[in-house]
Length: 445
Ligand code: XUL
Ligand code: CO
Image (cartoon, rainbow, N blue to C red; front, side, top):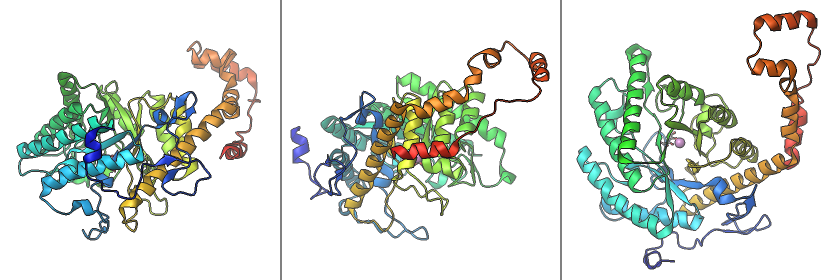
């Protein structure tokens, strides 16, 4: 370990680096399933999963009550010094956390890491100071930036949207902010950059020109793509779908809406999707559905790992612990070749009641173990082969004869009608065997 790391202040005293101890361990601060170097389908778990910790919840969340600002979470390192001093100290806290957890990546919004100034120029200067520190810590620890993003939603100037604001000055401000954020993400060797349009939508159609908004959003993204090329940033761009919250309706509402938008505005080659479980369920879909939609379009990029509470419905951003969920996610990810530039980014927060710093460890350990189990279970299901064979067999009528001719575009309605007229009735329908397949999955869980 380099000298610097041993001389820095320790914030999580009493928490040792989290080690893999296996399923029989009763140590809550250990991994029972996540064993970073263990090979699954010939690749180490850590490369399959590429875990990432988010700055916004983990470092900047305060456990506020939703009807007031009162902070519930104990974060002793936040006390003492001015805003910039705290921001710089927080970098040390974040890297100690990621290091002890063994998370290879982190992710941030520009305004999470550095305080916003009175002007864009001042905000940029603040960001530069913190980025210097982030860069140093990245070098010392080997922890990398999974993706950066600009906060284009919290400041009141973005009340009506950023790239979809009815006010062109707001659009310009947002462009300036994203330009800078792209530069620092590039500076930090980010593997990607995310666009989440939290306020790119509307509260009422009465005051909204949707067509113009969409044109503006596309123009904004084209400018970002151009600028990315100009500065030589090679990271992957992503759009993160979410249907609502904070606005009533967001234009990037789900994977299909995003893909349609990207295709319509000729952006599909430049952006993939960053899919989040709680956003999927808010949109009335499962996470696996969203992954399949993106995968089929060649746009499966990265995941924001969390879960909602279906009894509550809104974006509760809880840590994922459901093995069925992680199994489904990993089945689809493995099917489409796994994560490359993307990662498993814990866009998740502790419950307000879990207010001690050590709860951050319990939460992330649980999420990482749940994904490790999902990965191993999915790999076992794939090795077993029965599920895949069932699906393949279900579609066998497309593999030759009539089905193959249809897929190859060799026949049209005329030929098919002639075939159907001779057929009398379709005789080859078979059971979908849903319950049999659900039982089969349970054999592995
Ligand atoms: C909000 C959300 C964001 C994005 C990044 O629901 O998911 O934190 O992940 O802006
Ligand atoms: Co997210």
